[in-house]
Length: 256
Image (cartoon, rainbow, N blue to C red):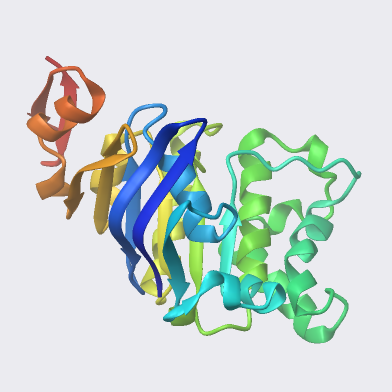
C-alpha cells in the first residue's frame, strides 16, 4: 500500500537515511529496528509523508503522497508518534474524537459509532469519561491508539496504513504485549502496519518482517527469525550478542 523508492535524507551535510526500497504490505506488521540514530524515526516520518526526502519518492497505492489531498490521505494512513501531548484539558473520548476530524468532525452517529469501535478495539472503553491527564502513561497510550484507529474507521482495513513510533516506550511489559497484540490484530484485518521497536524479542514475536537499520542504511530485512541473527545484530548495534532459547522455544539475544 505504501512504498518508498530510492530514499535519501540529508541534514547538515550528513546522510540520515538511504534506502533503495521499503514497502508496507496489507495484512502484515513491519518492525523497524536499530540503535539510536539509526534512522528509524526518520524513515517512519518519510513513509507518513511528514518529511520529504531529498531524493526518491513515497507513494500510496501508486500515487505520490504529495499528490494526495491531505484530508483524504489522513483517512488512509494514521501515525502514532513517540509522544502525544495535548495542551487542552480533554476527556479520553474527546481525544479519540479528534481522529474523526478528517471525516468531518465527530458529531454524527457514524462518527460516534466509529469512536466507540475504536475505543473497544484499543481496550480504552473504561477511560471514556476520564480526563486524559488523570490516566497513566500506558492508559494514555491506549487512548491515543484508539484515536488513530478512529481516524481510519470507515476505510476498508486493507486500504489503510498504521505507522507507530516506539509505541511501547513508556509502558510496562504487560501493557507492551497488550498493545502490540492489538496492533497485530489490526494487521490481521488487512491493515499495513509499520512499528519502530527497540526490543528484539517483540519483533520476533509480533512482526511478519523486520528492517534492521544502522547509520541510516539497511543491515538486514526479512522474516525476523531469518533477518535477526547474531551477526546482523552485532553489525547494527556494534556489540556481540549470543542467541539463547527461551523456555517457550523462541529465541532471545543477550550480550556475548
